[in-house]
Figure 1 (cartoon, helix red, strand yellow):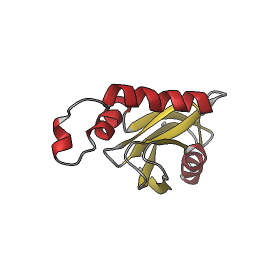
Figure 2 (spheres, rainbow, N blue to C red; figure 1 turned 180 degrees about the vertical axis):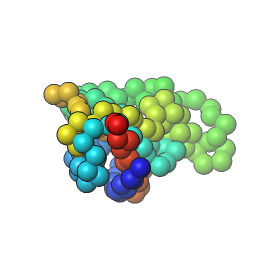
Figure 3 (cartoon, rainbow, N blue to C red; figure 1 turned 90 degrees about the vertical axis):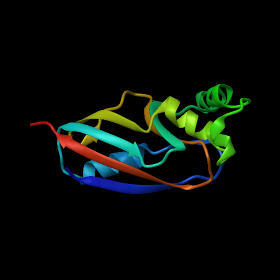
Figure 4 (tube, helix red, strand yellow; figure 1 turned 30 degrees about the vertical axis):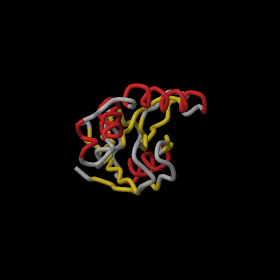
Length: 134
């Protein structure tokens, strides 16, 4: 099973980055026509999800994460002071599984593959693999 890696540079402490193009290029480079793609971020303080990449919705996502993770006394903050980033990543998840058809990840009209930075700015690594449908 081939794995393609690419990096994403984030510029803010919390942001949403559209990585759809990079994921589609990675999937296309594998030469697998049909199957399942796994998209994973190899970090504990960022996440990936699929949804619309609309400015208001992106702001709402970041606000939701902030509301469920801040203004509490987290035990992990005694070590790194970034518990909210870890907890936000847990809530969203660090991987996706998507169908592949014609060497392309199947997405609905408005769907995009989005990386959520929760402890930036940083350099993030995304891994993409495709399991062929046989």
